[in-house]
Length: 379
Image (cartoon, rainbow, N blue to C red; front, side, top):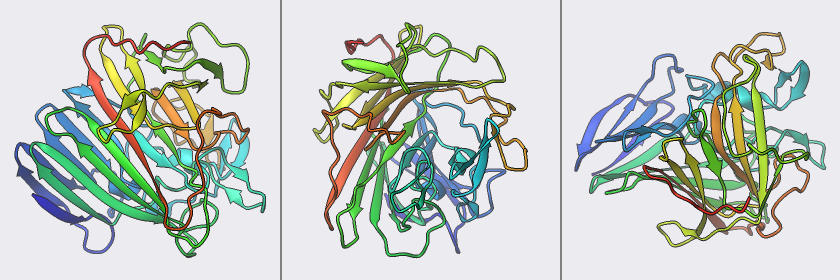
């Protein structure tokens, strides 16, 4: 069964559950979301996947083999994509930070970032503001195809990156990139496969500055491992002995964030299409965990965060708070360039410019496991 759904804009409405071969799909409005925003739910026995068409088809709450895969996002509700100002100011530790309001819309668990800039907010050579993490996770997909067959599901949609500075809303300029997103709940396997195709639709060569957050569900004592030759804390300093471990916030409500940049990464695992990947593992104290297979990327950071609920780390310019949940998460953050624009990337992996009409394909596969796996990380 294959259906095309309108997911944003005039004529959008809830779609009652439809089923095929033990898997179902429905488009629904969640309480507290803007009236124009709908979520897509895919369900089968032991599995459920929540997708956000209004947020670049980002992935939200997901259960695989009856296991919760991702964190509880800082924001329970989704933003209105027509009421987002990525170029606005936020106060971060009392310091005004132009172009950093992306954090106030952090409401999903797997988000594609970029494509003009995926890293920290900065000024380009032309002094234009490049907003934090770009706008790829803020653009609504207005139409999706949903195919249910053999107990699996394939969801696909696309959007354009149009603006020149990576902010949102778009400036009305001609499109730079077309992003086609394909998300699969694999048949016969409790696995989620994300495939993103980035195509240069402009008339000049462009660098696709993509990135991804993958925020997995932590618990005290869990260990996140990456098969790499070396790891160093973001910003330098000595590598702590517990750099692979997640723990609860030591001084609540203060948020603690740690990041460790990995190099010499082994890409020996394989995606279903045969392309190479890096096998990262989040292992819980009982030996079970979550496997996250990543595409080759110049920048790979293991990310640990905890605490933050009702703290004053992030404030709107008027001093009001927006974060009322702990920022408890662990997982990988990857990108085509360095997060801090300091060139601190793995020299063994490069991303090239795309000529007009050229495309690049990126895969991410996520699945649970229930017995201890050793990927033999060297660090």
